Every structure is written in structure tokens, then in C-alpha cells.
Length: 418
Ligand SMILES: Cc1cc2nc3c(=O)[nH]c(=O)nc-3n(C[C@H](O)[C@H](O)[C@H](O)COP(=O)(O)OP(=O)(O)OC[C@H]3O[C@@H](n4cnc5c(N)ncnc54)[C@H](O)[C@@H]3O)c2cc1C
Image 1 (cartoon, rainbow, N blue to C red):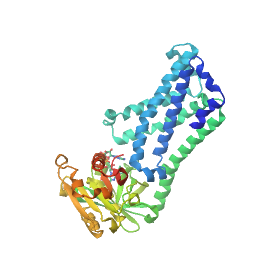
Image 2: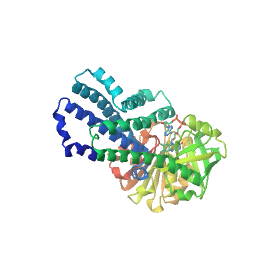
Image 3: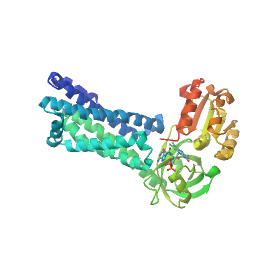
Image 4: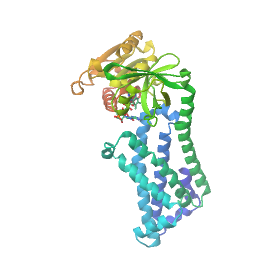
């Protein structure tokens, strides 16, 4: 972005800004450039770049991706409007006439127009009112068209963009940046998962009922210790049966069963998780990951407080694998009733082995005050606080504990919504 912006200053073409329509033209190319630069960052955020995943965590990175998407679309729409206005000022014709001229006479403008139509469509189905009406899977498939839009609009940027015309260095820098971003997507979203899935050859060996209607799914494979995942982390799982292969769903590993087996504990909340009841034994499983930064690596204090909201118990249970006895872990488990608690026996046993204890916070949402956690665990400010559960639970509880004096850096979270 820096290289591209500095070129017109270095070669003096920046002076063209004072010509008729010059400012509008400058703003149109600046908004286009900034919009596509943000799109490039969004692609990198969606590429599952390992260092980003490890440092910031999947939820945080996808939060940035979502926030940037609004600005990206607004800037690109501003670019379209400003371009039409600028060129019609230069050519002294009306905006509609100029729009037709732009799309029909300039190279790669048809492709750019199709790209904008795709962006409008994806922007439209992404507004909350529209998203509530379509399934997550349908939205996800349509939103992948953005990759098509970015590829087909690329050529009009480097061939027509005032910042690129006559500036081969800028063209090269921009092209290299996009090629690297594309390679990151192909490597980390397709290549690496494919290689790992083949190497570890996971398949389903057991599907059994767990507490509260949940399911235990056990997977067996080869050399799982070489995957290098830590307690608290999750994978995006793809069960390769005819109706399921195209959907990847995130589930935390709720337990490592020796060297070659892992266990998932799945709460049945919708179509996909309901259907896992009939998952055939022997199904091959492909996966992406490990992801997530809710691990013992985040520890800053000797002591630890682990809080599970509902199915968040899966991360807290596996995190306990890596929490040493010196942390004297206090575990708080929040659920509607005792019957809704998942993995309670294991968590109690593991906490006890580590000189810790378990508190239960039971009851309907409107009758339970999360503040009581701070009263029950009076030394929470001296502990690392690990929270896993629904987005609402995680966000509300971290805000409360922060207000009551816990340092932000000591609060580590995994929200079970992306
Ligand atoms: C980091 C993380 C770890 C998780 N770990 C567990 C776990 O150990 N056990 C467990 O039972 N659940 C876990 N979940 C939640 C689980 O992924 C969803 O409940 C499941 O994908 C729901 O799918 P569905 O089609 O049955 O339900 P739906 O009715 O389609 O969705 C229910 C909820 O799950 C979300 N969801 C649906 N599909 C996806 C998807 N592909 N990716 C992300 N979110 C999705 C939806 O936004 C919605 O909020 C985890 C989620 C995340 C983000």
C-alpha cells in the first residue's frame, strides 16, 4: 500500500490533482485502493495463517474479519460512485452516460462490474435481518463468491488504476501481495489440512450418548501426538459422508485417549449436530487445525480459574490436562441444572488431583448472577482466568470480571461462535 501510494508523489503525477475532476479522481482511486487493501487483509485473516491463529485466536481474528468487511464494502462502493462522478466531470457528460461508457469501453470493466454486483449481493445477505433468514451453510457458500469477485476485479485495478498506470514497481508490489495472500489461502486452508488429514487417517470408531442428550464421538488415527495440539484447542471437522462432507464444524477435543484416539463431546443444537447420532462407524474424518489460543501457554500467573458455560466444559476439561498442580485450579461450571452439566465427574477428579476444587453455578439464566463467581473465588485477581462457552456468556462474564478488577491480559476466552 505504501509503495503504491508513494509512486505518484515520486514521479510528480500527484500535481494532476489540481486539474478539473482531479480531487474526485484522487478520492476514487484512494477509496478503491484502500478498500481492496482491506480486502487483502480480510483474505489473510480467513487464510488460517498459523501465527495469527496462535497469537490472537480464531474468534478474535474472525471478529477483525467481520469488522473490516463493513469498511471494505463501503470503501469499494464509494470508489464506484466517485469514479463515475470523476470521469463524468472530466468528460463533461452525465453520470449514467459515463457509467455505460466506462463499462463498455475500458478493458476489464465488465469483470469489475460483475465483481461489484457480487459484493452487493454478499453485503445484502450479510446484514443481520437477512442472515437470520438463511442457514449458516447457505450464507457461507454464497459468501465464498467474494473470492471470485476479488480475482476478476484485480485486473482492472492494475491496468486502469491511476496509482498503477506507468508504475511497474507498484504493479509488481500489488500483484506479489495478492499472489502471497492467495497462496496463504491455498496452503493453510486446502494443502495443509489435506496433508494432515491423510497423514493421521482419522475415522469414527464410537458414537455414544453423553449427559443431557449430548454425544460422545471418538476418533482414532495415527500419530496424533505429532499434531502438536494443546488442551483447550479445537479443530474444524469434516465427516466424509454424502450429506456432510461439504460442511466443516468446530468442536473442541474434550479428551485425548492415548496416543491415537481423541474424543469430542457434542451438544445437539441444530441439524448437523442432531444428525451426528447416525454417523456411521468407520466414517473418514478430515480436519483443519489445531486452532485456538485458550491453552496453558497463555498462563501468566501461578494460579488458575477455569470457567465453563454449558458445552464450554469441553475446552475446560481438556485444558485441565495441561494445568499443573501448582495452579490449584478452581473450576466453575455454569449450567441450567445438574443434568445439563457435561464431563462433571472427570473435571471434579482432575481438579482434585491438582489440589483444586469445582463450584457449580446452576439455575435459569435470569436467576443466576454471574457476579457470584467473583464472590466465590475471592482471589480471582491473582489468577489466570480461562472462560469457554457461548459468545454472550464469555463476553458478559469477562466484562464483569474486568470491572471487578481482573486484568484484561489475565482473561483468556474461547467463544463457541464464530
Ligand atoms: C471454537 C469453537 C469450539 C466449539 N466446541 C464445541 C464442542 O466442543 N462441543 C459442541 O457441542 N459444540 C462446540 N462448538 C459449537 C458447534 O460448532 C456448533 O454448535 C455446531 O457447529 C452447530 O451446528 P448445527 O448445524 O448443529 O447447529 P445450527 O443450528 O446450524 O447452529 C447453532 C449455532 O452454532 C453455530 N454454527 C453452526 N455451524 C457452524 C460452523 N460451521 N462454524 C461455526 N459455528 C457454527 C451457529 O452460528 C449457531 O450459533 C464450538 C464452536 C466453536 C466456535
